[in-house]
Picture 1 (cartoon, rainbow, N blue to C red):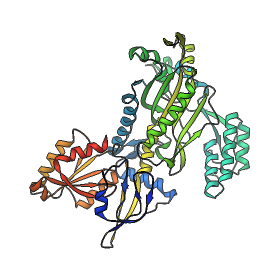
Picture 2: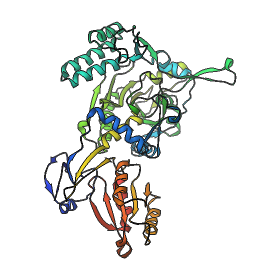
Picture 3: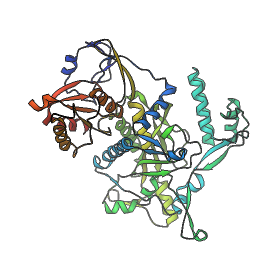
Picture 4: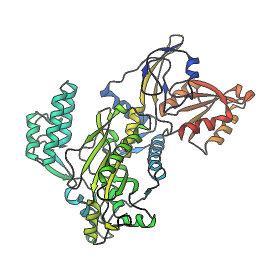
Length: 526
């Protein structure tokens, strides 16, 4: 008998009880990871204080090859990171999962891959040249520059931690109202009234607030004096808008339809922070959905709910998410909201849904002097379509998966001794490695059998092969990178062609025919 810390059943009910290994084995369809997680052996989880959780995740990400500081041998570059062997696999899996959900599961959504460099007038038309900026403030004593909203949000977090949630809510409401009104004098006074000081100098000797443009510029041309200024794109959406007619005609799309794109974007964030949450080079996954004017309200509600369900479909608890409706709307927007996730540093935006009206296509029509309209046969009318945008940060989704998956566990065995492990409960469909194949020893023909299984499975999903160290150590290493299935080849395999399958989350082991392994794993990662 083993004591469970938590048994999450088919649904959201939680139970605390004594259960036997036989009972666990009898649960139908175990391991159905999207329906159940059974955590065995645990008397308690090793609690990681909230303020230490992000540093623990960052250290784990580097140690196990998920994320490295960029150019680390030169002491790194601020707010720029490289994805390692397992990080690049996880990132690709998230991207592919989103892409499939958009372009394969929706018959009226197609994809494009637009260039990073675009004609500079694109950004004049979109408003980025004149309006893409954040309110910044400098401390005169330390010379350190801050985003005003970050200072106020940090103060609100302090109030919440001190048990003054009402005051924190009121402060954020004041900030949103002042930002909406672009009342910079009022924002500065709000800093003064709340005694917000510089973290370096400890003083509140602030400059006036001013706007800071976030776009990176560069030069195109062989001779500097004759070169033209162009910009690294700050978002991927404009590549979709300027290709609206190309896509609509070549893909023979009818309204309503969407265009999806993933790709790099660049923003000169002065206050980049919180690991890969806010970076200067990042990746977006965006879909622009073009609709008939007058229907945008219904489609906004549809995509708002559909995008939340996409997140929940990964098995992440609903209480970790919330909607945040924008108080300050862009001048062209009718409605806008963020899907926020509870990161180790609080609820923050991971995805945005915006009703953009016809602003983007109309602006490009004006600046390019080319019509960007659609003829609707159903109503016999030409019009500029309205747009509903869904925009999710791939790097933020990566951090979301790591934050939700990371767990430190202390285990109590049958003999009363203790053990521990760090495990990533990554959804199997996203896991960097799906199956680890582990021969018990390096001799007696076990490696050859293991290699045969490896060759059978690796065309269908990512596999990992290892012979070194005791089997328990190998299990722990696979737990640490989130591998959902481990298969052990032992001497019994040679006689009856069965192997031991070990499940990451429950640590339950069962004996199955080796010929069933590929089918078993494939069923869980579809």
